[in-house]
Length: 95
Picture 1: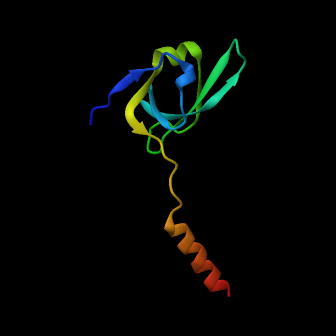
Picture 2: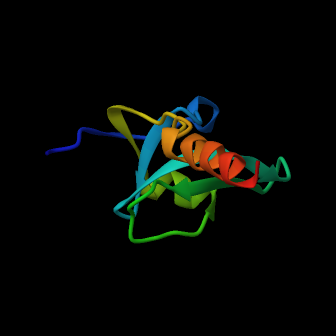
């Protein structure tokens, strides 16, 4: 599957619902921190990526390494039925 990548030029367009490719890792944007003069942009790799820990990029690194993956959207995982079933099973055992 070929990904269509769009270079990120405007940090105000970063969104937590979009997926970004940074140094080959698919990630989602968590927010920014730091100062107005020295902002830091926080990202978290998506599940099943080689990189696991969140990481920060300064504005210069963001502009040279960050690409939006066109058409790919991050959605929070739904609550799994297995966890509810396990909870119901445990409740049944203790009653």
